[in-house]
Length: 353
Image (cartoon, rainbow, N blue to C red; front, top):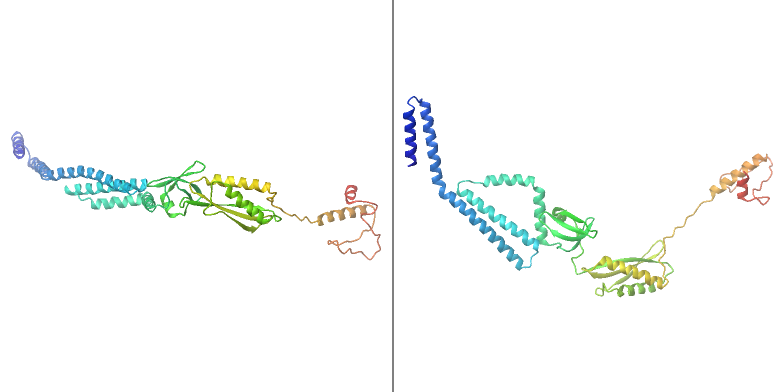
């Protein structure tokens, strides 16, 4: 029917334009063939196009079902919330990519080469993001630390707030939020203070060299055990550490629960130790420094002033070397000069000049 309509339109155009050239007739015939070919292609591909659209709709629902199933399975095994979220997203996106590829191939569009080129371009452009994403997935699967753990990464110390696909958020004890890329977390050394149920703290105390170390150690042990935040198993320990410049240093080591406020416990124990030492008359010495001041400069100044005074009085003075140990006199007899005679002091000599 469509072909008949096109033929009739062609005949009418030919009757109304008897003077049409051969080129016009050929152009019209070519346009007719193209239109016919286009509609024939649509009729031929219609089943596949509808099938591709149906596949897209089915893929959409299957992707949701796969994500829901994966999330439910991981949650039943008490997996980390961030792991569940990440794996659910990956499964949903993967299912959609497979469905779209099948639908396009069904209508005769092969996107395998296009996907390869696009993937290569995205790989170069988004290599940092992809690297952080992969490292985040590995961190979530291996679980070197969890949300709420106290960790130290480089100079940053704080609690882990979130482990995202691109970065890890840490809240420091100063109230700052630090966003660390997962690639840095994966490649750097991470200290996890919450990995074990207990954490050991240490306080170093210096006592005077005259102190009885047995008494000081006993007071330290009793003081530490009095604090309710200190665990008795493992037991605290008091060790004599070293001979320091001004004191003998004693190390006090004790364990606390990882969930406790270990900064507060440490501060309270330091205050208790100070009070116990004050009560027992045990001193914590200040650093002591001994300064040795040479007096040669003072002697130089005094000799110069004496010589100036004698020159003014026209006296012959001895020639003395710089060491002030062996006075050397000339061959000519001179009057012996006593700089401190007549009850003169060095201060008077300086003032008389």
